[in-house]
Length: 66
Image (tube, rainbow, N blue to C red; front, side, top):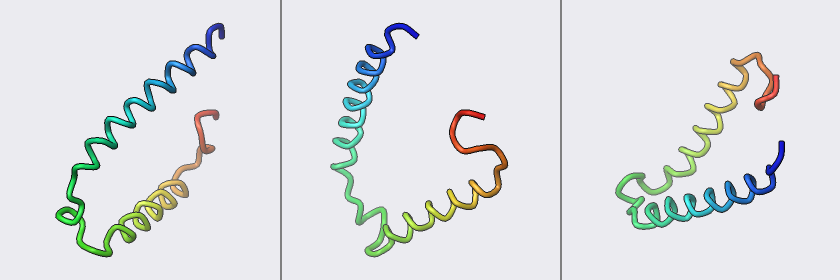
């Protein structure tokens, strides 16, 4: 693939700019109105457990290569 370095560089810049925009919008959210105190850790643990369950339910290898 020719020009892959340019594609990676431009994709990285685009991704970082997009991430910056998302984080700027999320910074203005009052998370205490959405999640009560102490529940954020439980949400993270729940997401991790759900990912483990879903991974064990699949029989294909992890990643894009099969």
